[in-house]
Length: 185
Image 1 (cartoon, rainbow, N blue to C red):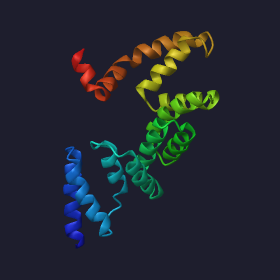
Image 2: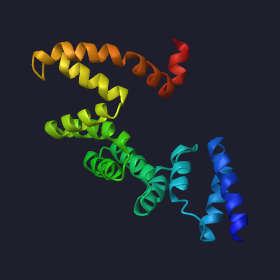
Image 3: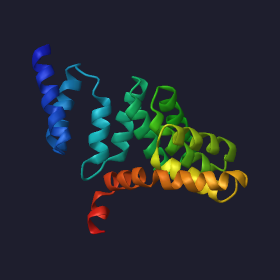
């Protein structure tokens, strides 16, 4: 396979992947990988993670390969799979690595993992960073923490104002993440 054909095939595989046609995209990505084109490990991980039936072990294998290639999405995804298995320390490792590589959206899942581990000070720092980067769920949690008085009485009023200001962004994010729930009302 020449480079031009590989590039066309890669574009076609990406279109199929975006359309949710995982089995067809998988065949193309596997062929590209076998012929030495790519890096396609993150795409293979994504396919195995999202196709039905899901193959978590293969997804983790390909995400791990993509992490070694520096793929930030793979760091985030592998952190999520690791957390879902209950390995929160492993999830913290991958989320932290993604943050250091520039993915500020990983601050919020890092906060959740650290909170579950009982690392209160580190969790608070991750929550504050996530809120500072505009994550609406982090802003909600930060506002509720302030409303509880855990950050001192003076911050209670700031927390209320912050929560109210954040409601439109929170509702928008919730509709994007849970579209079927939003339609049901």
